[in-house]
Amino acid sequence: MSNDMQTADKIAVASFLVSFIALAVAWHAIRQSNKNSSVATVLALNEAFRETWDRFFSSNEENRYKNFCELMNLFEIACGIVNEKSLSGMSKKMTTIYLKDLLKDLVEDPYTLEKIPSMLHSPTTFEQIKAFLKSEAAISERYDSS
Image (cartoon, rainbow, N blue to C red; front, side):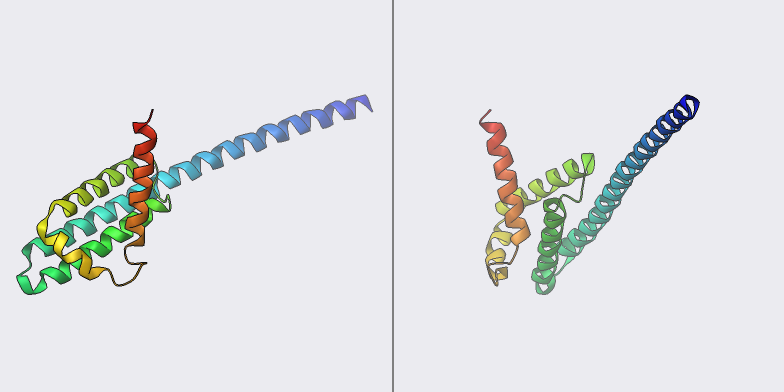
C-alpha cells in the first residue's frame, strides 16, 4: 500500500509539473498573440492615417471637408481602440503619443477649429475622442500631482 501511495504521489507531482508548464506555455502564447495583434493594429492604423492625410492635403476645396470628416472618423476609431485597451506595450504608447500630437495639431489649426463644430450632430458624436481626452487628462493629473 505504501508503494502505491508513493507512486500516486509521484504521478500527482508529475501531473502538477506538466500542468504548470502547460499553463506557462499558454500564458506566453497569449501574451505573444496580444503583442502581434497590437502591432498589426498599429500598422493598419498607420496606413489608414497616411492615406487619409494624403487625401486631405491633396484635396481641392470642394472635397476638403469630406476628407477632413474621414480623418476625424479615423481619429474616433483610433481613440476607441485605445480606450478599449486593445493595444499593449509599445504599440499602445506609440498610438497614444500619435493621437495626442494629432489632437494638438487639430486644436492649433484654424481650418479644423472652424469645421469641427459643424460635425457635432449629437452628444455621442466623437464620444471616443472625448473619452480619450478625459483619460489622458486623468493620467496627466495623476503624474503632475506626484
